[in-house]
Every structure is written in structure tokens, then in C-alpha cells.
Image (cartoon, rainbow, N blue to C red):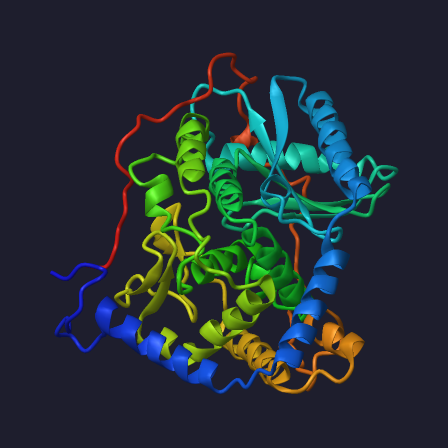
Length: 420
């Protein structure tokens, strides 16, 4: 049996991790060597990135607006459910990687002795959805998506125009946000790189997992992976931050994760790259490996290196290991058509980076605006169909909320399933 970091052939025609890692490094070096940077171009490129980041930085008004939504929606849900419940944010708001146009991720937690089943989560989500539809003065564009892996209801806060995504008992999201927030404390370049990449992806219409492209979580994982695999590395392997912890119990793990992250502060000090150079080399790295995804290539932030996944684990056009559950491909939603579209956008940007920067505003629009040239037309999207939120089956009825302490799973070593 081969480990995920083995360096010889597995004997079934697929590359081992050592072999495919060497191939990925070789093609990255080739693409990077094709760049010719003058001192003047580097200065202009860096200035453009700094100006973009200045525009992306949320104002205090933006932060206050999100805090107010969390507080008001928590009060609204307490009135709706008439029981012991709480709404808490997670995602980019908690990790401080949001911009003024980012969605706000919310999770509803109800006080139950045992974890909620999917049916129970749907029951509470449908109750809240029905109440939302009756509050036209406060909430708009209500779209329940009950058949998703994680059922959500999307809505827009009328006062601020901020879109919110509500899920129920999303402990996975809370735990992931805890880890990502800790990484942000290790090196200050993590946050701006995430902001830039999310904005670039959104402006090129490839930041929507429900439409077959990349979720913000996948983009963040790829940003982490890039910072881990720079030379010298900027971030440590996640195995050094979460190894041996059961992430299902976020409250218990919080102290350990924070302490471990603190011990790694300054880890990337030997890497002197500016955020502009890290942004450019991200595109070089991901563009270079286009042909290797189909060979079993997988980006592992837990190991901080490229690894090989056998076919049964490489379920998708792009494979990005989910550190919360390494048997899961976080990018499995990417469809073949969207894979090609994503890579057209990546390759167009790389080509633009190679050209002289003659007009700063046009160059900035190419990165995060509507000036992607040549213009790429995204694949057609089917019209979404949403079920009637009032369709609550009697079998989903649950008893009144029970009092007591939240369920805490027993701790144990993480169930890490790598391709061996």
C-alpha cells in the first residue's frame, strides 16, 4: 500500500503523489519562466493590486450593517420559533475575508440534546422561510434551496441590499470558519489574497458552486494551498493546526486551534513576496496544472502539497481536498463545461499579466471588473426551480425544543481517509 506522499508507481497506471507532485512543480516552473518582468512593470502591477485592495476593503459602515443584520435576524427567528434558538454568522464575515458585496452566511442553531436530522433541519428551515415571506417590508428575493447538500434559504435584507444565506445547525461551517480565521492570524497576506481571488472569480462569473463553478470555500482553500506551497512557504500545513482534533466540536477545539496558530505567527517571514507577486504566481500555479487534474492531481491543505487521489476519491474535474473531511472533494461541483470556462478565464488573465500595462484603469478592470479580454461567454445556466416552502410534510413534525446542553461528540483522532 502506498501513502499519499509515496514516490513510486502504484502499479495500476495512476501516478503516485511523489510522481504527480514532481510533474506539477515542473509545469509550474515552465509557465513562470515565460514571464518577463521589468522593474517598471512590477511597480505598476503592484500599484494596481494595491488600488484594487483599497476599493475592496469594507468600510466601518459595511461592518456595522452586517452586525445589525445578525442581531435583527436573530431576534426575528426567536419570535418565529418561540423557543430556545440562536442565529450566528460564519464564513467570510467571521474570517474577515468579506467585501462590501459579499453574501452573509448565517446558521440557525436550536437547543437540542441530539444532533438534528436532515428532516428536522428542513422542518425548521421551512418554518423560517414561511415567516420570511410574510415580512416583505424587511426581506426580499427569498429563494429556498431544500435539495442542496446543505439546505439553505437565500434572501436579501431590504435596508442594506445584502444577500444572506441561512442554513440550520451548520456546525461544519462554524468549524471551518474557526480554522480559516486562525490562519488569517498567522500571516497578514492571507486575507488580501483571498479578497483579490474572490473578487476576480465573482467578476468572471465563476464563484457559484450551484452553477457548476467554484465556491468561495474552494477559492479560499486554493489560496491557502498556494501560500503553503510557495518557496519559502507563507503558511504551515493544516496538519500542524488541526491534527488530532475532532473539528465537529468547534467550542472545544477553539482554544487549541488559536494556541497552535499563535505559535506559527511569523512562519512566513522568510518569504518576502508582496501580495501582487503572490496573486500573479497563484494564476501561474493553477493554470499550469490544467492537464494533471484528470491524472488524479489533488490540492491538499492538510499536507500542504499536491497529492494523488485514486479514481474513487477524485470525483470531479478539479480536486481540492476538504480539510474537514479529507474523503470529500470540496470542488466536486465543477462541471466539465465550467471547467473549460474557468480555465479560459485563468489563461486570459495570465496572458494579460504578460502584456505591458499601458492603461492602469483598463488593467484593473480586466482583473476585477467587466474588462476581461477577450470576453469569455459562460455556459448557459438552467433556470432554477424552487419547491413551495409551504410544502411541509406532517412526518417532519418534531416536538418542542428540548432544554439541555448541546450535543458534544466524543473526541478522537480525525477520520482521515487518504488514498493509500
